Length: 123
Image 1: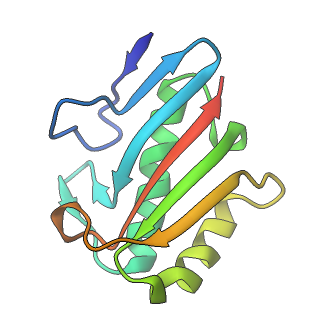
Image 2: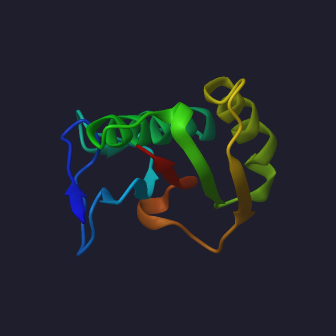
C-alpha cells in the first residue's frame, strides 16, 4: 500500500490519508470544500462542489490517476435540496465518462460543509 499526500488538497485532520493506493486501485478519502491555499471552507453549494472535485482531482493526480479513471463516487449532502445544483456542477466534470455513484443526505458534515465526496479510481 502507498499513502498519498499533496499540498494541492487540504491537509488531513485525523488518522487517515488523502488516498491509499493498493494494486491498481486508488481509494480517495472524502473531501469537503476547503480551499487548500487558505485553509478555509468556500461558501455556497456551487463553490463547495467545485472545490471538492478540484481537491479530489489533485489527490488523484498525485496518485497517478485522473477524474476520467474514477469508477465510483459517493456524495454526501447536508441538504438533499442541494442535489440538483450539485448534480449540475458534477456533470461538468463527468461528461462522457460517468462513474457509478450514490448520493444522499446526512445529518451533518465536518466543519459545517454542505457536501463531501469520496472516490475510487484506477491507476
